[in-house]
Image (cartoon, rainbow, N blue to C red; front, side):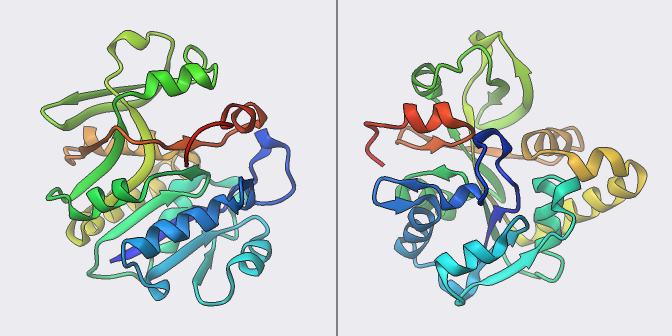
Length: 243
């Protein structure tokens, strides 16, 4: 199993001049918390790949030279899905965990993903509304997500109609090796057809696209604490959470 940490973006909304994963949350940076969770789940350093871009040298300085770095040289004009497929070009015949680098999460949730029987599964928070109320983003940063018998049937569209949202996409997923082969083909075919769209497509909208292409994606549900850092308000709201 390989782990892809998506850390190519600039984090413009936070108005910082370094990758978001280097934000210090309490005594540790976000990336240090992530690496600790991976270590607790027996993920070897040689199996961790930083899908980097903006100021990757700062991340290297922080985490050391034990990890593989694959840079998306066009990070300014692309999004995380493009960064992901750039990072897995040469990876064959192994399952992959892919995670955002601007989230803190619980090690037990990562373990649940790893042990999941599903070939394609992503972490979903069923109690997300309490967290989004704390962040004061319930009506201005909510996305559609519908689940039917543990299968995700749609996600990723901005909405203010929160009544029918079944959960919140966290940003950590597991994809089996055979599923990786299939979605690689889907992505690259559509990148050729619609380069403007697929260079910039984000993860939830890509997952929704895959669902429409009959690729099954299942929910691994969490009731544990996690947090996402998008802007300065998130930094303020995080205080007091035990993560």
